[in-house]
Structures are given as C-alpha cells and as structure tokens.
Image (tube, rainbow, N blue to C red):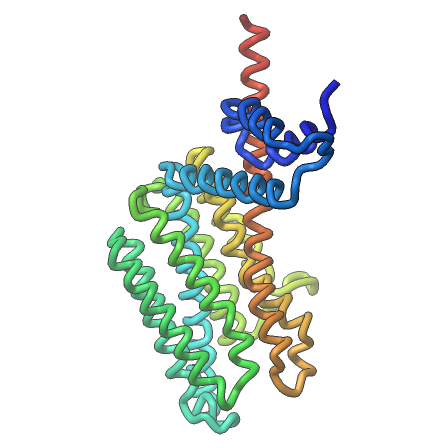
Length: 339
C-alpha cells in the first residue's frame, strides 16, 4: 500500500513537465522518501516549496524553449504586425479627430485650453507607429524593433505631457504603452522567423489588407466625416463594416498553415485583450464619474492591464494544448487500430 507521504510527494511532482516525470519521478520519490523522518505523513513546508518552485522553473523553461520554435516565431510575426496596425490605427484615428476639430473650430483643443495639443500628440504617435509599420512590412526587423522602442517612448512621453492638466487622460492612454511592450516582445521573438508578409500568402495578405481597410473606413471616415447612414432602419454602415472587416482578417489568417495559425491566434489573444482591459478599467473605476485620480485607480489600471492579457493568453494556450493533445491521441489510436 502506498504511504500517504509518497502520495503527497507524487502530487507535488505533478507540477513538473510530463517528460521530466517519466525520466526522473521514481528516482526523485526514492530520494525524498529516504530523507523523510520516521512516521512523517506530509512533506515539510520547505521541501514542498522547493519542489513547486523547481517544477515551475522546469515547466517555464520548457515553454520558453517551445516559443523559440519556428511555428511560434512565424506566429509572433503575424501577431506583431496586427499589434502595430492596431496602435497605428488608433493614433491615426485620433489625428483625424484632431483635424476634424481643427476644420470645425479652428483649433482642435481650444475648448480645453490646450491650443493644438491634440494634433501634436496624435501626430507624433501616428508618425512613430506608421514608421514601425513600414519597417515591419519591409521586413527590416532590427529597424522595426528599434522604432518600436522609439514609439513606446513617444507613448510614454505623451502620457507625461498630458498628466499635469489631464490626469484622467493618462489612465485612458495607458493601454497604448502596454500594447507597445507586448508588440515589442513579439517583434523580438519573431526576429529569427519568417516575416509576416511571407507567412501570409498572397491571398492571405489581400484578405487581411481588405479587412483592415474596411475597419479603417468604418471607424474613421464614415464615423467622423459622413453622417451614419441607416440600413433598413436597423443599423448603420459603420456597424456593418466592422464585422465584415473582422471576417476578412480571419479569412486572411485562415490561409496560414494550421500549426502557425493556431499559435498566431494564441499570441493574438493578449494583443486583443489589451483594449478590452482598458475598457474594463474605465468601468471598474467609474472614470466618467470620478473627480480625481487616486492611487487605487492607478493600481487597478496596472493590475487589469497585466492580468487580462495574461489570462487571455493562458486560456488560449490551454485550448491549443488541449486541441493538439487530442489530435495526437486520435492519431495514435487510429494507428493502433490500423496496425
């Protein structure tokens, strides 16, 4: 009969990767049992902590080695491209809003007492991210990484400039540095893989470009320059264009080979979760009703911008692992039946 102490040790060893357990579990259990006190029924706290820490390090190390695989690098290139596009699109949208105010009111920020502020802010951010986008599309990888660092500094500088007079704007803008950091990590990861324009074939590039163009038209041109036209009295043209744009982008991604496509979707999960986290921050802290920024709001902002993308990545990674484990299991079963 298995001793209770051995059962506890084996439960703790479950944190190690399966390959490690197959190779060393019996040996480790033997060493642990040999070092236990007579009559001991549970692992000592220090032993349990050491096993958990060592197992997590082994598992994270295995995951880091996996991320260096070709499929992950190619997927990171695609995810980084869409991250750059999102950052550039939002900055350009703000620039267009500023230009619209300028045409209507002579000065885009006069009503806030900040003459020309919006154009300077959005103009610098737009220029920075459009430069990064050009480098990514031209497959200039080192240049893209360097320009992303510059764009990140521009985003941080914009927050610092707005903070004394518009403290809530810093909260509203905090998602951009968070996404910029994530995009920078993806660009660094993808440096030894294929460029995103190569991973996407010709039709994939065309579909993705069409989707992004529709999204731009729906969120900027029609919303700010043209009165929203009703369709059958139920919806507006911009509201129809956005789902259509998403469908085109997904169709473009579907052209990518399966292993890379699935990993691209995993890496895209935290990218898309950053704007979601920003909206969640605004709702949690009731930003429209608050009178001033408090330390609690700042802590909430930071925690949600970290936790929501991480949770999205974790859930997507678990889904990928389950899907590929199931596929391997089905193949093994089929081969056994065929044999």
